[in-house]
Length: 154
Image (tube, rainbow, N blue to C red):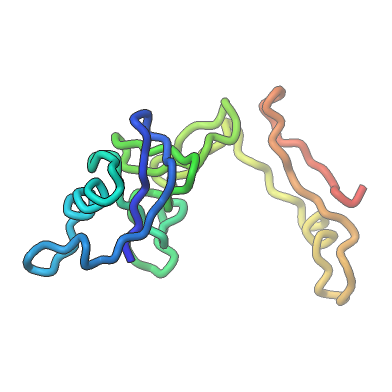
C-alpha cells in the first residue's frame, strides 16, 4: 500500500490515506507519485498537487526496516509539509526549537544533558532485580531555555 497525505493550501496535513499500489502505476508497472495524485484527485475531489506521498516506515529521517528514508517522517494529522526541504514535520514542541533537516526532528537550542550513572542506576535496577527507586528525567523549560531535572517518584 502507498500512503498519501492530504494537505491544505497552507501545507498542514489534514489526513493520510492509503492507496493500492496498482492505482499509481504507469504502463510499465512502475509506481509514479503523480499518477497516485491524479487518482486521488479524481476519487476524493481534492487537488492533485495537495496529495503528497509519505512513507509509513520513515521516522526521524530513518527507514525502520533499513530501506531508504522518504520525506523525513511519516505524515500525521497536524504535521506540516515542507516542500523546500522535502520533509513532513511534526508540530513544533516549543517556539525556541529549530528544524534539523538532517534528522527531520526539532532540536532544542540547548542539548539535553545526560543523566549521571547513579541517576540511571536508580531509574532501573536490573542488577538487584527490584523496582526502580527513582524516575529521573529532564523536561524543557521554555521560559528559562534550560533543561530541568526532575524525579517523578518525588
